[in-house]
Length: 628
Image (cartoon, rainbow, N blue to C red; front, side):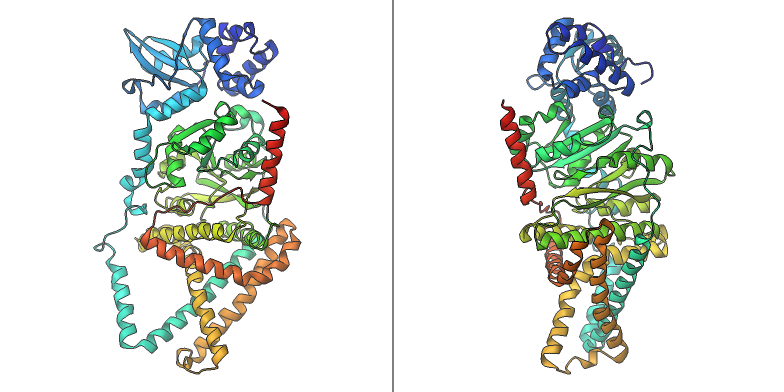
């Protein structure tokens, strides 16, 4: 806000009270005042970050030094009649909250009391106001609790109400899905009347699908592997040019991993006052809440508590926190993520230089424990091909790009315009990437990596991959409700790319065991019973797709780690067949769940890696050495 004195609280008697009580020294006070005015940010938050002072002691000193009331918002929450949902962003930015009406005055809770803030409060409430003092953590908690019913309703229902055609929570009825049922009936009739002809045609279509899938991925690898324009330098934007950045971190049952998360967030190379970091937790997740309190995370970040409701999904949690976001740009990180420190600066520079239709930038993903065991090595090869070659290839060919589950950087106004994430889609990221393209926006990539913990246990990996493939089924089904409209909006190349990259990713996993079983049976028996299903042209196409295709996919897996100079991973690509079998198993689990439990979120368990456990043990030892 132009003219608002952001450093006013510390520059006046409130700052004097802190020095008089020995809470901070004069140089720290002056530094916080300068930072607050430079970045137009709350001075108390800056002071807490710079000095590690106790938030409650600061609030007590403000109240005593200025003769203001010190209020406990947990014991005495604000009067809902005094609150205005349209002011939510302002409440969060200025850290104030209308509390109660007392006579002709509105009592306004605040974190950094000053003359300027009093004037701001009176403008917001439309009349005379009195300031009262609380802590930042208490104010954020009270604010989200006061608006919880509205936030929950919109998090769950906004997309389904405003755009039901694009919501996985609103499946089409039989009346509107008649073309698909008609097609299924026609296929069933053909199979019943002429089964051998139907199976021969099916074989031919499978061969065409495999060849098309192979061709698309080959073209994508060539396009994505071509020399990319260099990413903007980390210092491409001066600090004064940088926009405010919201960082959303959804957490559920992650108490052990919080020290790693806090370290990763602290290493971000971005001015602290411009970061709006929100840790999103389930209100009944007592273990994670206790761990956050032990680390005093609420003094450094906003802790947003999501009331229990269904569906219990990551996108619902992100939707809940989105109205609280204060950043011009917004990024999602997962609990175990370690983004490269300059990632936000690079993304901000790309957004600054790009046309306004660039809505989102996807960073690359890979793993910091890739060498742990066979499964993590295969997972790393999988990600290297996907994020280092295929997604850049999609961007170059203008094919809709399904986002990864983390490190998606958005222009916040556009994210709100498209109604954010679908809470019923368990790969909400992939769906959102397609939805952005349908609305005329582009998704790009940035040459910066976020390193994650690769799941090193087969059952954990299977749960995760099942969720991903189920979400791809949901995404394909939702966007194919109106195929002609999808063709019109995406164009022929985009439409076909969507079919092969979204639908084909699932279909190939489902078909592979059938193809493998057929080949194994034929090799084992030498029987000619299936010869009629493979006329010469079908046999030629099938052999080309299966034999040459498998060789090419192995080759692509081998070259995938070269961009990162991970040459020691390349030979492991020769063991990819069991990994593909695991993908097929996950595909059949996904298909079953799509019909039986479509909104089930099978959570990935973190903290199982030896590397993660060693890091956490080191953190615990350091804490013990420092003492209480």
